[in-house]
Length: 61
Image (cartoon, helix red, strand yellow):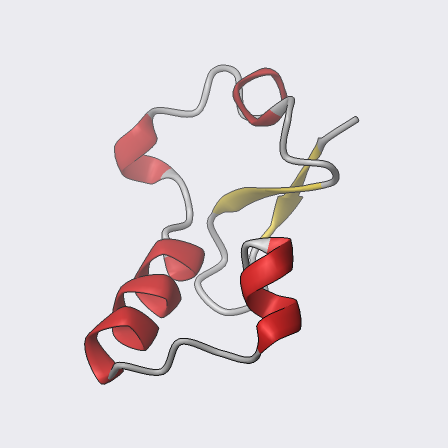
């Protein structure tokens, strides 16, 4: 189950947990007011060409 937490970096609402209940955890928080640090980190990693090791590929991280 996912729960709402505050991002320590940007101080905006985000989630923690399994990832299957994100919308429920962030109910009432407009998408433009949610933390986007994870998405920015993923985009930066993709842009750098760093694909990670075999375990991260297997786990989808």
